[in-house]
Length: 270
View 1: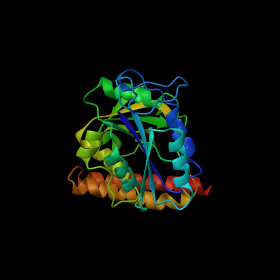
View 2: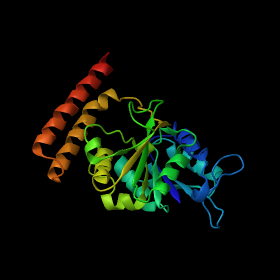
View 3: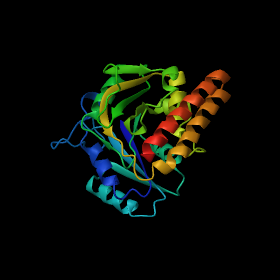
């Protein structure tokens, strides 16, 4: 089974589109089946039942997110589960979804992002073909990673300078998430980067070099640049405390990260 975890906070305007992008995915082979109209069928008993569930975690929304989620669940009986919790942040919301997941594999999708057709089936095929593989992610927004092959592995060292594991593109084994400790709920920014580094440190990450998600940066991104930068610097500090990078390596990464931040700040000011 594959469990799709969608954390949602005040996402009434975008949640429907995100869920619909999951419903158009086609699962084949041992992963599950498709309905006659190409949409996935609900997870249920029986050998022919497709193994997919959608878990929407309403993270204390104050808009009509809960109503939108209930409407989506009513239109797709047996396929969508909704969990309501007090506002605790994206890390806690994703961890709630992970704990509730029935599947051996977990996919993440933010409520304002969308998947393109074929994404989930391709990633599951790659994951199932290699028992040693822990996580599969993709490119986004119509752009492939330059000078990279169709598929390439991403080591801990490769990932350190740039987080190219986009959360809404990830399909990962649930056992891998448990071994890595899940998302760090004490953090607001860069908690995903920390988790991907922990997974890369002990396991194997594969990048499918196809842009199979639409990542929506949303409003107010310029105001969040510095908190995001501080989060990345804290991630490097955590890696240093774990003994996974040297003090010299941390210093180099800090300067590199700050340089990227200044470039982003200049771009957003133009």
